[in-house]
Image 1 (cartoon, rainbow, N blue to C red):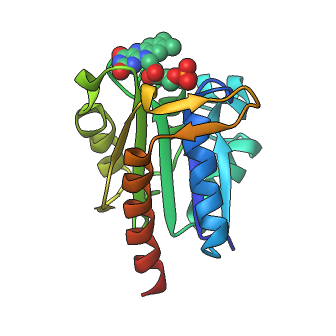
Image 2 (cartoon, protein in one colour):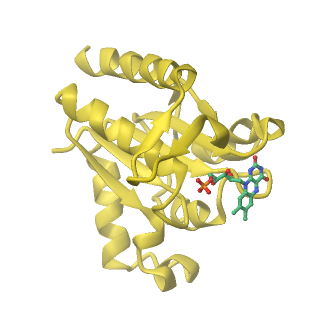
Length: 176
Ligand SMILES: Cc1cc2nc3c(=O)[nH]c(=O)nc-3n(C[C@H](O)[C@H](O)[C@H](O)COP(=O)(O)O)c2cc1C
């Protein structure tokens, strides 16, 4: 059984958000925490936009969430909010699907002006889904992550420190 699921609400993989995603995956692997990822844009688009609750692929994704203890929710900031792509999937998660889960929202944006987008836009939705344990949020400025020529990502130390803090906190919760 996986302990952690990373939901990625981006519209593509070639993104600085992927650098953050990979960092979390690597951290979890090293910590011995089993994890799996859901890239929302890889789920069947028609099922997402028609809110097809009968979709097998969506059911499989929801089963991953049901089995997980920790759910990371990664999103770029689009138009002062989390992505519409992510919302299409959140709408298909069963009511109270985040109950008893530890949730870590992580956003990347181009403007510090949208630092609070997770607070005012995403957190109310997480609450409706039953989340009560949203222990930390990390907001990353896209300038703090560099895409290297070889396709890897270089994340500034200040961001790595914040990510490490969050991950260590969640690891401690797992061991309890
Ligand atoms: C359609 C669109 C809308 C965006 N809107 C915002 C926004 O309102 N606020 C913000 O801080 N960044 C905004 N951004 C920037 C992205 O959040 C962010 O920098 C990006 O996802 C990371 O860049 P990358 O995927 O090109 O590496 C927007 C980007 C796109 C494509």
